[in-house]
Amino acid sequence: MNYLNISLAGAGRVADTLCRKLYNSGHRILQIVSTNEAEAAGLVSSCNAEWSSELVYDKPADVLLVAVPDNKLEKILGDIRCDEKTIVAHTAGSYGLGIFPERIKKKAVFYPLQTFTKGRESDLKDLPVIIEASGEDVKKVLEGLAAGIGAAPLYMGLEARKMLHLAAVFVCNFNNYMLTAGKEITDRAGLSFDLLKPLVTETISKAFENGPENSQTGPAVRNDSNTIEKHKDLLSFSPELQNLYSIISQSIIAYYNKY
Image 1 (cartoon, rainbow, N blue to C red):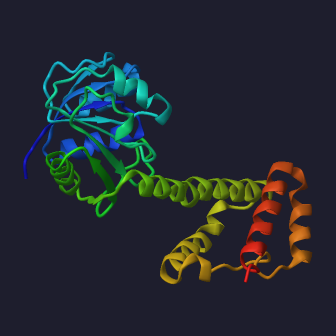
Image 2: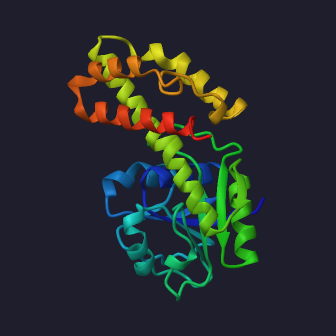
Image 3: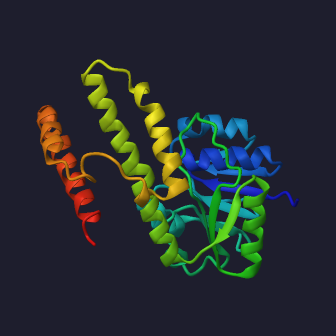
């Protein structure tokens, strides 16, 4: 395995996880740039790196990972000053190579298909890391970087990756919000949210074993209007959840009655 010199832009959840994994795999972390020194302090210390608030990378790195919020990505890429031989790779799922300024020649996407939380150890074994690169040499370096932390590199163009990112929003972000809604309801009833854990675990397992479209249960798939109306009455404490319940139930009814 070739050990690389790596720098980062960002010190949030994605940057934190990737930086620690890369450092623990033997790579050298040179610089971490973040406007929030307090946020970056623990990461800088644990990876024996240098912190800066300026996007000037005066130590030539093999790879510069840009792990920042999507709405800041274009500006940050435009402000970066680094060695022209450095591979600059952003971690955003819904942006491609076109967001880079022309002066950056070695550019790439290094998108880990996972949800990250600071302070929570993430297992990257076999995790898909989606790669797009400006050249074969850049692609090989990033494939090696992903494989070296146990992940599974996968090359994919922008249009397919945007659809994958959209799918991820449904199965991760929207799904988590549904769990939040479920917890609000159990909390209101004075029940433990943990009572739902076996149900959630079986639901996800069954979806991947049998296909989610073949695993739907509940009142909506049966078009059980009596139960649906009772549930909506129970949700009178929250017009937002009541509306959400109605929209999703109608969507399920329509999906399973479209043929």
